Length: 276
Image (tube, rainbow, N blue to C red; front, side, top):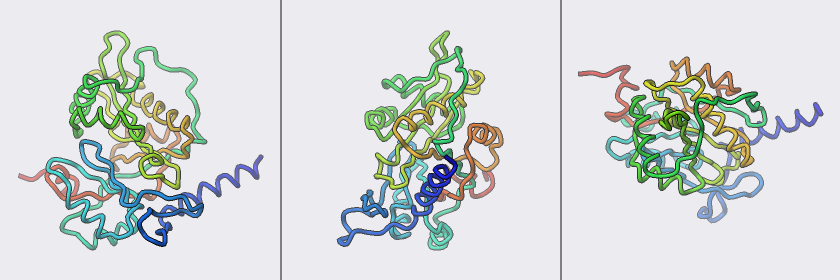
């Protein structure tokens, strides 16, 4: 049994380190390959409504990532994650890009422990309609987070790549929390078989104990059911409360960084605070 656990851990480590060592097909047009020969989508991006996720490991050249970030829409927040040699990328466009002051945490889903009990004060359910999408924006707004067009949220939910969940109080059906999951395998045929979640938000004016934890658990269990290997998240370096929550659930910090474009939305992140 112990030998099997060690072998499984070695396999997971190989998948993790292989993420930056993939090669093109001979014709260069059919997507990149992992060691098993599985193809994955090159130059993969996802429109989340509040901005795009740019999966840096699917780009062969840093110049292509720079081109993508140059196309960022006004009042949006594009995020390049899993960038190979992020220091090189920043050196190529220091006037345009900056290293986001956030940390990446990962939960290996085989280590997830099911809760002994669940709250009876609220329920977790998937987004169903535009009303729910507007409720998501309301919660995000209450937390000072970016909003997305409700129609885009609903459109994304109609795919299997995105999974939007809401926490809803049982007594009055008020939406008090939200989280969105992204399936990397379905997004670009991720050879490391991963997933991530974004925009965890709990309404500070209607905060109920355990909402954030329950939302993270729901997403983790969703991707366990899909057979994914791990779940990633990005959190600001000084958000101690959130980090304590993630660590208590088994997440551990990994050396993965995010790169963003210098713009009005991100200004306080690279200047250290707002300037008049």
